[in-house]
Length: 397
Image (tube, rainbow, N blue to C red):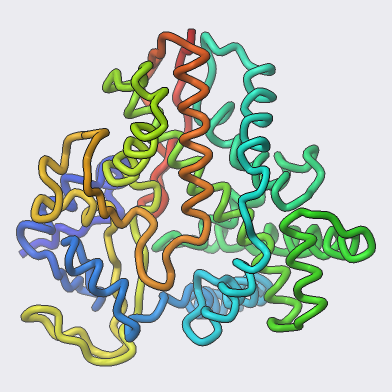
């Protein structure tokens, strides 16, 4: 029987939900020919994400193998391999526990609302709101500007950091070309050089920024190695920028297309509920990977130690066994225990920031404008892991 798991097909990248539905109905614990398990039902996905014996997928190990295969080109990807090994998202306990605690000691949400509001005003002052690209002129710059200010970096640098982030996010892709790994290696080197320079400045001139608090916490405790500190400084920028941009793009697209971006969303409780539902309905992060450290029985299937698993969050969030009318956007859905940010110990660190930016933005939009229209069809990025838009022209009046 032909496998319904076809992540390479362009039609599945642009709209994975029919493929997810077929897998959920026919083979929800699907074993691919390459030995990978594909999980599409909600309860299975949640159980795996919460089970400690399933470790995070080792992207660094995969890239190490890729670099060995291309040694004839005299290239080394040691910089990006070391960085990926340091990212909190790719670590397992006890290292993950220590690193996450270290980051959370320094990260708080003071003044974030003010930062977001000021960034929104700055963006709208520079665009023609009657005809602009939602993806490139609003959704992408807003979180990049916000993370730049939270980290205490020069605002003039946000476009440069945004460009590096877009290259580095490919590390989450299921499959990469040699050329893409080359670009990621170069971006990693630039990120390290940039954050090393600004970390040194924060040591001599401390402030209340996240970067400064991380640097001085490191100086006081030395709880983590220096290279892990620097790697996770730029990982925080990437995580805070990419997922939020995806939520803004997808969320506003669906709200406008379904005529649900209206004065009702001036109500803060409805905005919060709508944000959760948009995350469920079309998750920016579609897939996460895990590795079994021991044999594990999942219903009638035996997952063996060492087996890789692809957990389709987007599929789990449309599971009719968990959500009534899963293919409909119901802004008042309650309860709404979606898996858009995963769950368990590796739940996304910046989920609160992504939701806050979207809620502040939608509140300002429905207060400032009275009509919203799509001027053309969306152009999707061809990336199954991170679902987002290349461009979408809209009009706000």
